Length: 326
Length: 254
Image 1 (tube, helix red, strand yellow):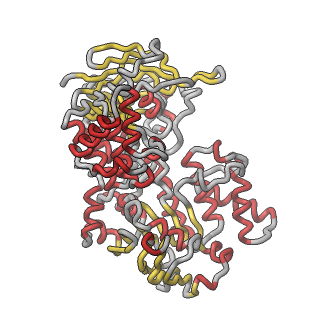
Image 2 (cartoon, chains in turn purple, cyan):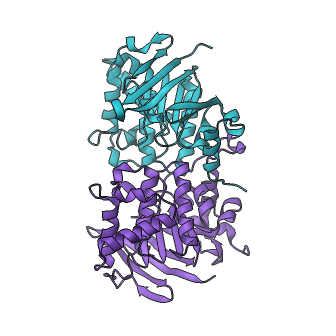
Image 3 (cartoon, chains in turn yellow, brown):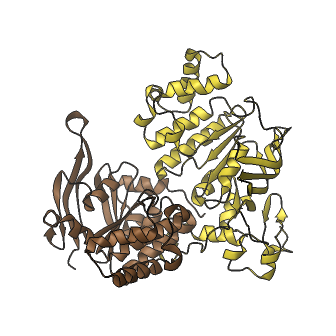
C-alpha cells in the first residue's frame, strides 16, 4: 500500500529554564493510505507529545529538534519551519483532541464553531455556505442535523465527541491525528466514535488516521497496525492482531497481560499490573529504558540500548530478540 | 448471612415539574459482609448518583437504607462515615492541593475524635504500607509530587485506614493507565480478603467488574435492569441492555 505520511527520526523536546527534556526520541513511523495506525503506551510515554508534533501544533516550550516529515511525497523540515502555513496545518493534517468539552467554546452554538473553523482557513466563506456544508456532512454521516443549533453542554459526551470529529474533518484533511478521542467515553459511545472514523475513511473524507490511546482492546479493534511507545521511543510495531496474540517485547506483553476484558480467563487468575513507573525523562537510564521494570532484564540491557530487531513492518527493540529472524 | 447494607426502593429526582429527572428509580439490593458488588452502566445511568446516595452525600427522594438493620437516617453522619468510606474517580480532585499526604490522612482520622499521636502515626504507616507505599517517602509529599497511581493508592490507604465496613469505589480506576488498573483492583481484592470489607464498585467497564466482583447490578436509566452472580450476568445475560453493553465491549482476543 501507498505511504501517505511518514516521519523519520523525529525528536522533540520541552525546553524550559535551560533544561531540555526529550520526550519524543528518534521516532520513525509510516501511515498508509486508508489505514488506521494505533499508538499505545502509558501516561508520560510521549504519545500525546508525538500527536502535537504530527498535527503540526508544536509550539514552545515544545521544540522539534530534528526529523523529516513526508506528506504525500512532499518533505517538510519541522525543525526549521517554525511557522507552517495553515494550508498544511488544519487543512492537510488535523487534530481530533481528547476532551470534546474543552475543545468547544461553551458560549457558541455548534454551527458558529463550524463557521469559525472553516473561516480560519477559507476567510471568504459565508455563514450560509458553512452551514450548508456542515449540514450536508452531518447528513452523510447519519448524525442529527439539530446539533447545529445546540450549545456544547446540551449534547451528551458521546455526541459531543462525534460532533468534534465532524468539525475537525470539515476541511477534508488527509490525515487525522486522534489523541485519545474516546478515553472519557463509555463503551457504547466509544463504539459510535470509532464507527464514525471508519465511515470518514470509507467515504474518503480523510485518507488516514493516527489513533492514540492507552486502551489496547480498543486499538485492537480500530487500528490496522499498532505501535507501542515507551519513554519516548517506539519499542514494538506490527499488525494489530499479532501485537496482541504474539507480542515480542516484554513491555507489550505486560500491557497485554494487564488488560481486563469480560472473557472467562481473567477470573481464573490474578492479573498483574506493571510494577514501577516509567523513567524520568530528564535522566533516562542507559541501555534499554524498560530494563528497570523488566523481569527478563540482564546486564547487557542496562548498558546498551537495543536496536529494533525485525523489519520495518514488524519489529521490536529488545535484546532477547537478537538473532531472531522476523 | 445477615446483610451489611439493605437498600430499599431508593429513588432520587433532580429538579421538579416538567424538568424533573429521576436519576435513580426504585433501586433495591442487599449487600453481605465481605461481598463485592459492581454497579455497571453507561454514562447517565444513575450509577454515580446511587453511590452518592449510599454515601449520604445526597439524600434520597424516596426509599430507605439499613446499615446492619438500622435505618441510616437515624445514624449521625460522622458515625455513618466511620462505617462507610469512599474512593473517587479523580484522586487529584479529591485531594486538597495544599495538604501533604500526612495532613490529609490526619484530617481523616479526626472522624474518630482525638487519638494519641503514636496511635495516629501507627495507623497511617500501616495503611500506606498495605497499599505498597513507603510511609517515610510519601508522608511529606504534596499531590502534585505524586503520580496518578500513587495518588489513587493514597486515597485507598486513607479509606482503609478508617477500617470501614463498606467501601464505595466510584470509578476508582478510570483515570488510571491500563497497566495500573489491575494493581488498584488487586489492592481492593486484598483489602476485602484481609479486613472482610464490603465493596460497592461503580464502573462503566464490564471487564473490570467481571474481574473484581462477586455480583453485578446493571443499571439503565436509573433502574437496575439485571442483577446476579458475575458469571451468570456476563455469560448468560438476559436483559437486552446487558447484552448490548457486552457486545459493545471491544473484543480483545480472536
